[in-house]
View 1 (cartoon, protein in one colour):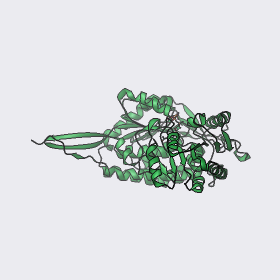
View 2 (cartoon, helix red, strand yellow):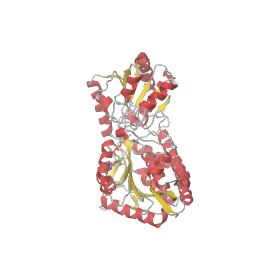
View 3 (cartoon, helix red, strand yellow):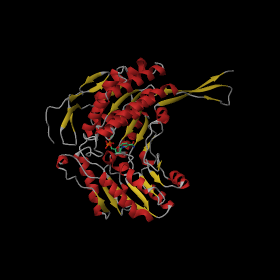
View 4 (cartoon, rainbow, N blue to C red):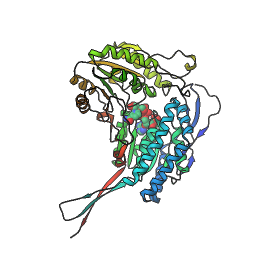
Length: 486
Ligand code: NDP
């Protein structure tokens, strides 16, 4: 790790002001391409969470929830435009901070603006119902904001995943306390500043930086917070559930995954092989939707492995600032070592490493947290690389002999987030999609995420949904009103 020059100090955003943490401490943010410290960031404390919750409550009380939906929509459209105006700045910040290829960072920041716009439009479409109850009278429901909500997000798609929660939370009339991951706090803080620039009142968006174990836990436990929206590891999600129990907080959890990519012999195998390396190696495999298990019909197993390995070798690993780079470093040296240990475990348990799994030889990448995309063949369901979420560029191939076996293998995991089915038989595609216990399935492609459609997990992959109108409802309370007309 090196320090080229004095890195800038980044402060939290509380009540519309840039503030230091209550005890004045900071933590370093290190970029993973060359190991340079790029910022000193205020290290928040539970006292700062108290301050942020008070600021958010004051903003809630002084009108964010009660201005017209049309006025909230107007401010959110303006916010989306301000994000677009700062598109290149935010993209560069995200790319540098976590080693994300600049092409991917540009795409994500564009989508952040799209998400805010989608929910800006949805603001005026959120409504209750009238219900024909038995008793004579008039019954209707109201969709009301919850109040102050806490949003705790990870580092793999930092601002993009934050926008999945900010959009619906703000559109429904809540005010927020956002905690970014400690690896990737920079775009979240900048977003807090841009929200003010767009005209959102002070205190509507507060950003508290600092460790999950103290700041994150204080948000999850805070009695002034009515809901927590979280994306991260399953074990952290379980801890948040425990902490949230104190005031029966509402919670949405988007957690880990071990998603299957199921290939039947009648599929377009060339298309599968050309597209699917990106379904697991994109973002260096640090993607909850990563198709980290390839289940392939035995009759085409050898052909699929050969095609997939060839396509994997063509994935361009390199400097994130190069627009041609498709896969950059892992987020940190710690994460790189963790993933390398999984590669070792795969070998030790008898899987065959067909390609990758080692650092690149290019001297320009020698200071970074790089690991070449790895394809393991001859894997079995007992192996660690098949059972556990690796969160790195590693895929395991397992053959199957029947449709039933494919579904059984796909479901042989405590996770249930995402997956793909490749077949030309439409009946089979639908049967398998219905059989797989995941919240999101793609047929003949790997597209899991659509801003307009719900995203989330079955089983230990989560609770509740992000995106679409489902997410908007998750950030509301529903009130039933009955009027006696006699
Ligand atoms: P973590 O769960 O460690 O961290 C996520 C966030 O939670 C961070 O902001 C972290 O803060 C915070 N946090 C950590 N401990 C606590 C705690 N005790 N109480 C409250 N907050 C806490 O996940 P990672 O950052 O390692 O992210 C990777 C994981 O996220 C993967 O397992 C992946 O599957 C999952 N993920 C799921 C997605 C989905 O949509 N289902 C999408 C993307 C990722 P800090 O950074 O300071 O530790």
